[in-house]
Picture 1 (tube, one colour):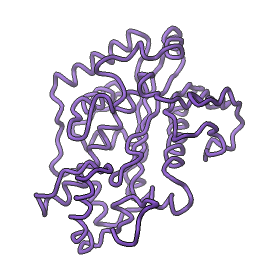
Picture 2: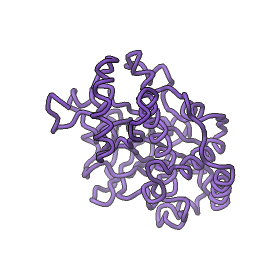
Picture 3: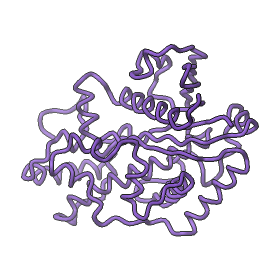
Picture 4: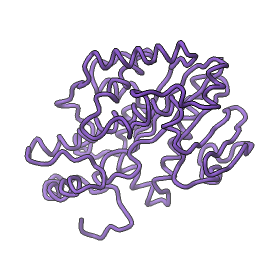
Length: 316
């Protein structure tokens, strides 16, 4: 059976918290493959769509239910949110924390106070939805997420690699990981990265490979990589391909979980601190200001806390 993967990012533009790039892959029947190519929206419904349309900060039970159900489908048993993170992360823990100072580890990776929030009915509904996808020829078998922390994004920026390039390079790593899992060439649909139309010049690990340009349009850019497969970068893919939508939902849950760890780290000492989303909103701005003195006292580097922006001055 052919293999089809969907990849999407979460957290490209916030001030705080990691960027997540998530892949979900399925074995697909030939009829489902044609359906995905012609009109993938036929597989979407009120519980499976772009995460931005279904969940929001602080209200991610549906995304959690999908993440847990997808993990189960991929033979992953996770009894806690932390176990789910560890199982779905593309990188081993020692790789993810290799740049962390000691207090950075506690700020970003402590699972203290965590628990699942979705009820069993929500998880069971997601299981049934995955069973329905299977009956329609889409058998989800693999999922992984690449967690790109704030420090990694900042250091990449210092080396001339902006957030869009970091997003693309993470997608490339997931494409190769999915290809290795499938042991045969695959077809991949990725969300569009920024305003790019020509992707190969901006690539890292795939950029030097033999390839064929199948099309480069504003709506979709497609490439054939012998030994890897066909890769599409499609506008609004998370609202038109069920596997990209699943990647969006799983990634949304993981980003919310990891951002909440950062907030809880500071709220343990200052419970009155706001529940910041990390995005560019007044609550997050207030959180950044309110934690400044404590971060200075603890010696937590700005490089590990907040993404640098072109508008930054020396003072926060």
